[in-house]
Structures are given as C-alpha cells and as structure tokens.
Length: 254
Image (cartoon, rainbow, N blue to C red; front, side, top):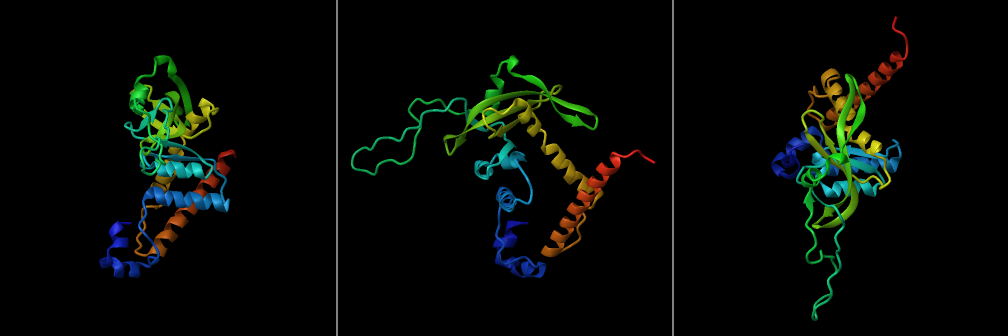
C-alpha cells in the first residue's frame, strides 16, 4: 500500500471508502514480516524453526536480530557488499578522561582490522574450501552447486555483532555467486546449511502457482476486507490442491 495513503490527509476519504482500519500505520515489509512471525510463534499455531529470506530482508540487521530473538534460525540472502569480520575485533569501553561522563559504548581498538565485504571473503577462499553439494531433487533432476561455509562476525552499527555462518553458493556452470548469512549454531552440519539455502525456491513456487493457476493476482476489489478475503481463499485453495496432488500421487492412475 502506498505510504501516502496512510500519511496524507488527502486520502482520508479514500481510506474510509475502502474500509481501511483507522489504526493502520505505514510499515515496511521487514516490519510486517516481523509482526507475522511473532504472532505465529506466540500462538503456536504452526511449528517452525527456520526463516528463509531474500536480500530485501537480509539487508536489514534489525529484522535478522528480531528473528533470532524469537528463537528461530534464519538463512537470509545478503548483498555482496555486506561487511563482516573474519575474526572478532577487540571492543573495550574507553577509559574516562577528565571530568566528563564515563563512556558507555564500546569502541574498536586502534589498529583493529576493518570489516571486509562478503565478496572479498569469498574471493580469498582457496579452491579446496569449495565442495559440490546437492541442494534438492528438482523436477528435472538434482539441483547441484558449489558451496563454502565460513564462520564470521556480523556488523552491527559499525561494531561486532553476532557470530554467524557465511554461506556461499556458486553456480557450477556460470559461476554466479549467491551469499547468505545464517545464525545457525556453530556445530550445524554443512548439509543443513545447504538445504536451507534452497528453501526459498518452494516458497516462491507456491506464490507462482497461486498467481498463475489459482488467481491470486486477479483480485478486482477495492476494499480492505475484500482483498483479505480473496487472498485467504486463494491460500486455502492452494492448500487443498497440494493435498489432493499428494493424495492421488500415491495411488495408481485409473
């Protein structure tokens, strides 16, 4: 929804006609996602352990920290210019000088190494650091890519943040590099990180199937309630179709 609809008084009458709840405020996609995940975890309506996200969410440290705060793991794509430390630099609190207020915030020590871009970290890895892994079995055969995983320190407001996994995925033929960060525990198997790096694909497939086959994008409504009803019915229809496909897949065709 355009931000102007929620902030400009010129749209007040349009908001009323569409039935937009008056308490609705403008929120970014990461903020909306955070609210939905919080509701799912608190209600315990769905079992969940991981969040898979593209760069639009992985580029927001606050979103990633919010996911971790819910007790969930994440595997989020990040831009190639994202910065990390290969080793955690020292960050003492400077001593008090003179009569001023004692410093409360940590600072990097003088001469501490600068955080490097994830692309630079990937480029410096030796050839033996990369292994060929099977991501999943696709409709046209197994999906294979070269992987390397490195333990690094994320950057939070110019200071060291949480220890995370840097998951590097390289296309076997084109060499295209996709980079993700994951807060998985240090003892997580590489196979688990490889699997999570490919879990966005089935989610995107659900959205494509719903749009192309079930009319998700064909909503001809102008009201807040009407749009939500349409989306809910399409999601239920998709759930029904998937269940039917799995049920009849196990039976011999007549």
